[in-house]
Length: 616
Image (cartoon, rainbow, N blue to C red; front, top):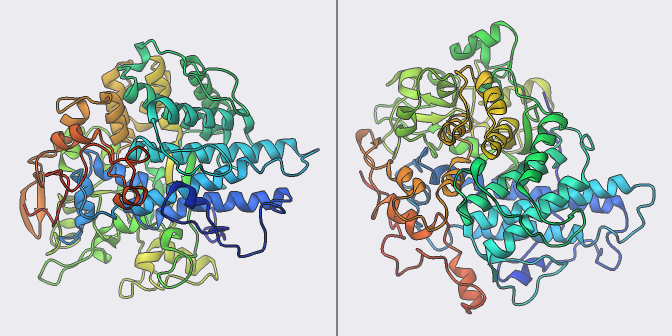
């Protein structure tokens, strides 16, 4: 098991929140400046640590993260939570409840871009003689992270301010995502893949790898071709070469064949492998929990436990460390807040019975957000073992009224929860004191380390399972979708224990839904399968609309879900799935030629703004 108490550098500088150029403003804390820093590889490694730390800044609020927001926006999850959690409800309905709803997501995107650019343009500030491989790996990681932050930003907001220089221009205008930003994103991932080497870093150490760059190149390429170019079924589409900007590691246009080649290199040479049992990917199979959990009793009987953080299937992830505190300088981004958000709703049922204690073993309490939509449960065959490995049918599995209750504050809760992200307990947990060893991680911490519980609250702070952003099964399915070959599709199906199929676009769509359910992937899959400007009848809009009339529980009473203002299909068609650009940014710039709001948003859009919790 990987140790969880590793210090990470939170940041080397603080950044403003007003305009693009001001994201690079910083206060000088150490007397280092661009005239004398960086002066060594060690200096650049510190900057690289600060760059990776931006992911933890995102993670401090899951409702600002690409993984959680995209999951809630999909047809497979509800915003849910309590009756006061208007923010999560708004996101799930493709609406907003306040102007500042995505301020920190915007801020963190540009912090990441600024830090990546700082490394890229400072990498040759000193002599690398004899250390060329180290230099190339470090530069490749910086290119990877810049591509990642631009990918996240452009998928969130579409046309955004963008620059590829040591400092931002002033003004820094919106660029066309289709014509400008995506070619740069693809170039960054190509540069990263070509500069890095397999095995240059230890798998699971939190650093980007050559294989991760190759996988993300395919993810970005497939979104670009599917969403913007409306290519349809990629395996049979004739795709024009993508002209890439000139930069180190890029050699001419990007072809579909090259993307396939990168995927095959990642699969065959990256050092990754499918974990034998799908359940072992998720922390409920850890050695402290599995012996007490009947669903995985067969694994425990054979000493087959959780594969752990940084396992052989993980290709890129967000990692966490024991530094989270509500009251200290470290943010809550150093604990897995997504796990807390996805826990069983922590209130009681009005009769004094609450979720998340011994009766609900092994799943802990939390805030009940991001619950699974009933449609996913209904659509998914019981014959697929991944269904119950992914979804907790809480009333059936834990016992309705004893191990699980619908609370007096619950909303959009069908009783289905995401096992991949839920907090996990064990029999040695401190049920009467959630401040000590409440989660299995808390028990592990007490038994195996001398590290303090810095958060002071195990229920809120002892969550250290990686957020997996890319894994080998996803890469294999992308290969099948691009090539029309069933070879890797069948490997994923064999591991899952389901019947193998031949290639078809529909089979790939279904397999991606089942294999990757609850991981924040599906929303952008639906978007790229639909193409931009698809209207209310496109695949994405119609899939989202199926949430209408699905069963949900509201404050202990069963009812049916409906859109808070118009319909999911109308909201998707109006926005193309893009978020509202923070109005504060637009007001600050005050020039629509530089920055303007996305379609479907604004105070004058009748169905964009949610003033209170939807009442069903």
